[in-house]
Length: 138
Image 1: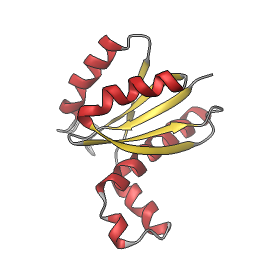
Image 2: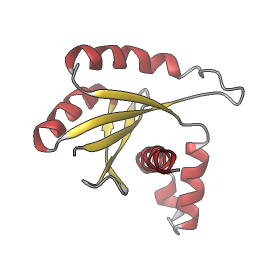
Image 3: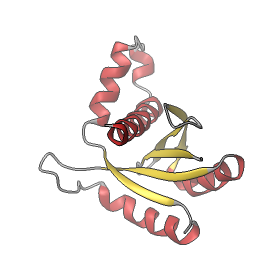
Image 4: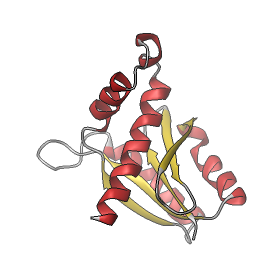
């Protein structure tokens, strides 16, 4: 069984998380510049079996695609062309940024570290993947 990777896609950088081999927990990976994301996924697949990519789906409170959703579609089209064997699922990422901030506060992350956007992105990716795992086990 391969791992599952989650992406919190952003215009400048992306948070990335992967499951353990048993798909029990989500672990954050280093934040990746958006322009390097395709190469990052390709390189990761050379080292580890990857069965599924979960990509956060930014939505408004009304449940419609948010403005930032339009930046993700071109990337997904390219990903499907270059890696047609990789399954892709979209997963609602509403509130992940707010939840990430709360998780960092609860975890005692310093104010200085909380200001690092990379930490927010990584934490959001872990939350997306954790929520995806929980939704599959309910």
